[in-house]
Length: 264
Ligand SMILES: [Zn+2]
Picture 1 (cartoon, rainbow, N blue to C red):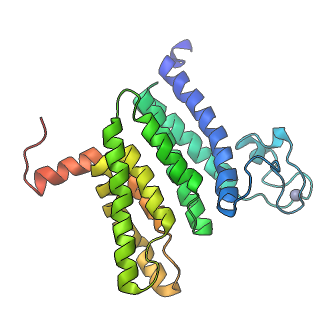
Picture 2: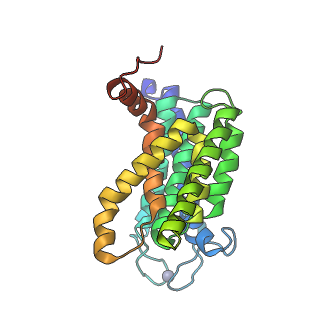
Picture 3: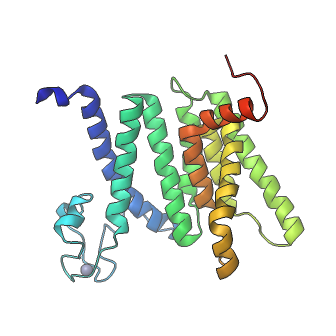
């Protein structure tokens, strides 16, 4: 009985609980930051009847389940997005600390993936990437680079400069060619943040994967519906894949396509 309560499992369980709570906060951030509302005041309330949500109904996932997915006051349906985002963020945090152990890298990875998730949700709903995620994340990424392991401060700084610079060039070139905004300011600031976490090679792979995913998945939809491409979602997905598998993908590419000898 006691041997399943190993230290690693406890760490990953506690990280999961922290992730559930952060997921609850992430819901609020993705709904309020894009419309410039405070994430503190007013407190959580039902969007239909305005009734304040009691703290025990606001417990991540559990609150939703115990209420049967309906507001306690008006019985209106609560969006399934709330518990799903909480659950997903909880799983990300539990997963990162299960994979990397109790380490700075686990914290760095869990924070990056949470920020990317928040960006994708904001961009999907509002076509806006809040500065709190992009510029706030940039500062966070540069700061975390001073911790042991992972990317070093110079690598983070160069990555941020490259991410910002490349998308700025695309934006200027796009505006010149199409005579209208081709790239949102939010995407540009977001890639500075991604660069601070993933460095220069990570920026290149993220943009490649983002453009690939965006054109394969959203290209046909956009063609039919004439909807704008929320490019931030695909950049976020590209950055998440790069964080998880970037060195494998880049290693495979340099060995099998460029026929360079594998490093070391
Ligand atoms: Zn209500």
